[in-house]
Length: 495
Ligand code: 5AD
Ligand code: SF4
Image (tube, rainbow, N blue to C red):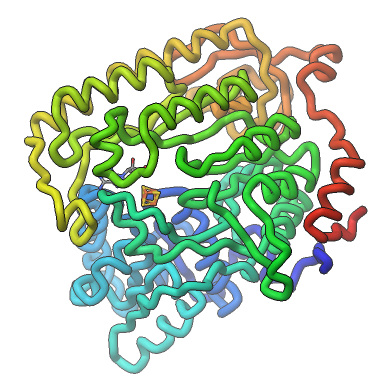
């Protein structure tokens, strides 16, 4: 088997083709990183069909909205947007509005009935998007919400819509099999499937060849990534191996990943991270709750003790690894004691940062069918606020520990406050602000942290040859690379 590094044709450019002589499409994306990645697949499909990207609703012939269903407030925002699009349709006859993503999959015809909506397309129907749009000429609204067991869009080169040309997402799998009782994702994104690693490595290489310096591998549960060669079922690749393959693309390509699942995150991933300096030391490890009865009810398939054992292993193998998490406040029948258990777990771990939510009932999930959403709203809010307040103090404490340290930072943009200042992230995913000193977006620099807030490190660039040797990218050991390539029988034609 060979990995072939080549562009398929001019449409597999990683950047959007801007051409206002072509039909114009505007894509608005809500929700998670996976949706951002999916919108890039949609743009790729539409570019091949002769559309070009535009940057405002007013210019668009086709407006697409990639939607999120994870909590009710995410859906309410979209309903609000539909009213705005309806106004635009009244002003400019003939424009087309399509709803993509999780909400399209969940609500199907209910969305199609909205007067603003012409097309509804679920997450596995993006190859069909150009046909759906052109079929509108029949006078009928169009819908495709068929979920697939195989679709990974492996052969489609996403067209990147990021502004900086430095960091990109790569989707490595789709769907989810975990069935956490509160979660709508398995219903709207279907069963889990892993993408062919050759196509993942090829995409990472292509991004690197086009000047990208960082890739983030995306999956709902990256630790359950498993690809088996359909031509040779004895040959398979797990997540640790995939991570290594991507890290081997180039020592100066940073590799990140999200999301890890505490029940599946094995030591292999941690050792691989330790082996490769270009795999960033940051693990997003959602805990959801610190209480065993809640974890059981959420169907998370780990206990607090098991979770803490994973955290201890991270700290042992990767002492400077940042750990971040997701927490849900006020899940069904959560008691004050359960809530206190969450706070005490947070104190034990001291997360670098966290995404924190109130439980939001999602129709037809296991929790909606079997449990009562019985924590009063005011109580959910109080508990969430306590969680946020505690986390803010932990974020600040974690950041304070970095003051005086030197980190390698990839420059990703200019500061909102001043053009003279740049922003970038440390391997631990902490945002740094520092004076530009002649450096530019896409450069790696070393910075010393001078002070911090709970959200940002304030730093200065240090230029010292000695530092480069200590903290820089080491050459990837050729012998390891060769051993690994032989192990999974993938030959990289650049070697
Ligand atoms: N209510 C609140 N938060 C939720 N999440 C998932 N489903 C729900 C829900 N019904 C959160 C979890 C998950 C993150 C992506 O969103 O914390 O990890
Ligand atoms: Fe939802 Fe659980 Fe799957 Fe995450 S792992 S997407 S929370 S079902």
